[in-house]
Image (cartoon, rainbow, N blue to C red; front, side, top):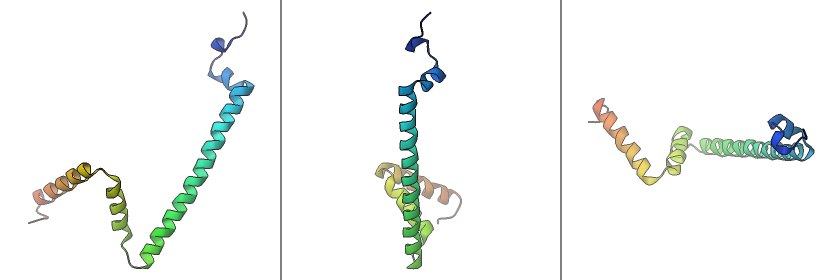
Length: 93
């Protein structure tokens, strides 16, 4: 019985020359992106450190960044729920 691409399992397909080259390409791209992500994370950390050095509260800045990523309606809903919970716990009069 001749071997065809349909007869190959994932392990067999990964060992063919073209599949191995494609797999290597994917892995290398992921590795490059991971390096870029690490570099970007280091840059972000530097900016927060700089902001802290000028007196800004980093925890609050992180919250603001997170909130700005949210859709306006989602942000409003979250703020309303937070207010409701705080009132229920007597934190807001």
